[in-house]
Length: 317
Ligand SMILES: NC(=O)c1ccc[n+]([C@@H]2O[C@H](COP(=O)([O-])OP(=O)(O)OC[C@H]3O[C@@H](n4cnc5c(N)ncnc54)[C@H](OP(=O)(O)O)[C@@H]3O)[C@@H](O)[C@H]2O)c1
Image (cartoon, rainbow, N blue to C red):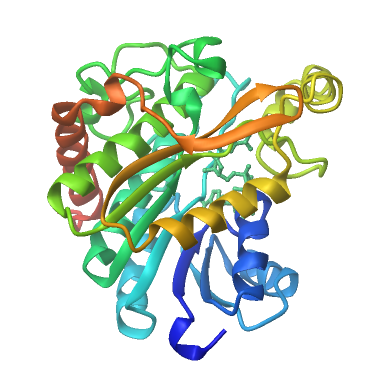
């Protein structure tokens, strides 16, 4: 690929799983990649896994102060970008107690949404496109979104309460699975609001489908700790018996496909890798859920998240 065609891409969550697979392909295409990793150890692991000219930067997405620092570094040394790829995410479904970020914010919301809003807000003038890994579980009327407590942010009372609220709606008892679904709803609402504020940007959210890697780490590692037998059975049945899952390699390819096809198209789109039948998926533009399409909800989430970020980063009096 000629130097002029080389894209400059920043990606979060490429030290493992879907992001790592996408990063391998992007580097093979000749793109210039900066991978944001949680610490130096994960950065060294990522450079070793991605032999090639990958660059890494360090910020723990569970610490807004560390994200604020890396934004300055990226603005000075790496920008502008063709695309910001916000792919990092976690869930700890099966655990009963909330976990907290450095600023005392529930961890799933803090990492999957809040840190990414800070990052995108800090770099939006320095990129052409923003690509966000969401999930169909944000939608209470479809597939996995129908199982268990549904996504729903209510009046976002939890965000008005500030740090220490276990759930965004401020009223539901803590449920780690719902916290994850809520965070993926936040991904879509944030994208919608970003598009409203900056229509010249390409803003793409996508859902990879259910991806259960065969490795011991990865996305289900925390759930596996909470329920090793149940999770092993779930993995075997969903992936090997019923073939309801997407492979991690294919999910990485889909992310690269989106980056390639969509980053020069200003506007908002949501793509989902829907399950057609055993071993068969279809990747296509899809309607987000009703709540994820609510522009008032999107504006309120952006504003309350921004307030929470500013309060968290303000020097202690
Ligand atoms: N797997 C699925 O079934 C599925 C389905 C729908 C959507 N998704 C979404 O796909 C995305 C990628 O997930 P995956 O399946 O590839 O899982 P994964 O293998 O666990 O990858 C998650 C990535 O996020 C990074 N990350 C987590 N917490 C971080 C923090 N505090 N600071 C910096 N980086 C952090 C991880 O870094 P470390 O390596 O250091 O932990 C890792 O690179 C997530 O947004 C997830 O919500 C996954």
